[in-house]
Image (cartoon, rainbow, N blue to C red; front, side):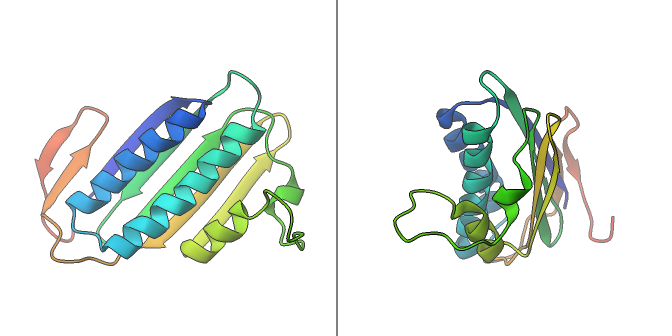
Length: 156
């Protein structure tokens, strides 16, 4: 099984709900366990919220989702000014702070989080999570780039 989704979204809070819904529905269709879907949804929401908050006004951002037999990899691509290295660290957060917990949430919910940030050239946040299934995933591949639905057998 191989699913690839590639989205370009406006830097707007409403886009976060859209990408979260699309990703969750794809995972649910292949019988991913609800807890795993929820972890991915929250991590994705936090990554997208960082883009909406920190990239420049009017910038679009991209989300690439790749789901294979046992892993979901998400890349959130901010082409704006980038998020500084301080946003990625684990410095203590004051209890009264209204923000600053998103990166910690991402790290707690997925197996791997990686930031590739270049000042004035944007940031790519990569999230990787091993999938747990609530049943047997269907044997097909979907390609969002126009390839349609194609038969798939294990080992391809």
